[in-house]
Length: 388
Image (cartoon, rainbow, N blue to C red; front, side, top):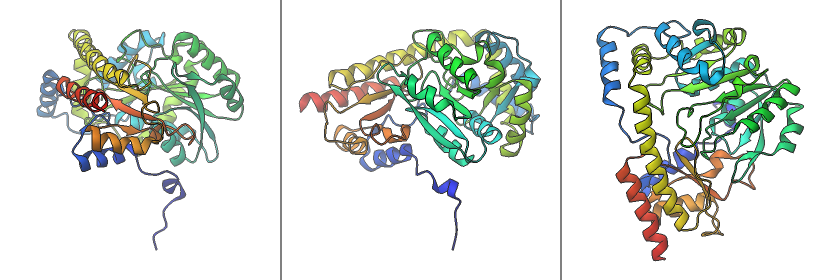
């Protein structure tokens, strides 16, 4: 008889997979997964082809290609408010997911308590469990999505690590400088290590995104995780990175080496050239203008039919409370109802919560879709609810 590890049995299947299955069953339009349906920019495809033809097809150094390390350092010195040693403090990984796993395996021992702001990106819970840690949820209070400070201060006293994310998946909120300073002080007072997932750093609608790693006393205790998957719509390329102190990076690279060795070589070179290009900022401005439009179209439809949410300040998700229109439904009921009757699909919120009392009233929608798809989704929502 096969005996599976307690770690792999400690978590269930992905709610996103459930949503995808429901979507296929009813042939509905998916607003569930975070995979963009917007195509990868043509210039980036050409760069990838160029470097494949030029034979950048073997392993890079464990830490990443020299050119990409330099490009990341140049782009991140201002947000982190310090100079960055490309070869000592940056590690290129197979996406942000591998960066998170590398950090978890390098830092978490069996029984270590890991604080996770709830709602959360579901991988935070899973990587903590896989590393042998104990995830501890800290409520983010709706709908401004700021931490429950009393609980955070209490739980920090016996925790080793805090995982945080801004711009935030799944709410789209962005933590302001005052909130970050307060979190930083709690981390310093309790000697917490912080993993700051800044995958959506460049995807902000209203403000510059601050990094907790830029605050006094936080550089040496913070691992910044980033990714190029979403900003360049290249989720299949699997290129992310970690920025940490030289000492911490040495240990992170040990786990990274045995998890993946390195990220894909030709894609590292292509991304580096794209980051160095004077066309990067105009590309980013146009991209976010498109996302702003899609956000506003979907948000207006959800608002008109009575769902409650905060307008996303970053990323490309809306976490909507549906209880006003379906008080008897839980999140799974709502996901099936939307797919079967409305013709759209979202993610049940239990993917993002450990607290069962909170995990029954929200659905997450992604607007990382083409304009016509978002227009069609908004039309379906309005037609169904306004007609009923």
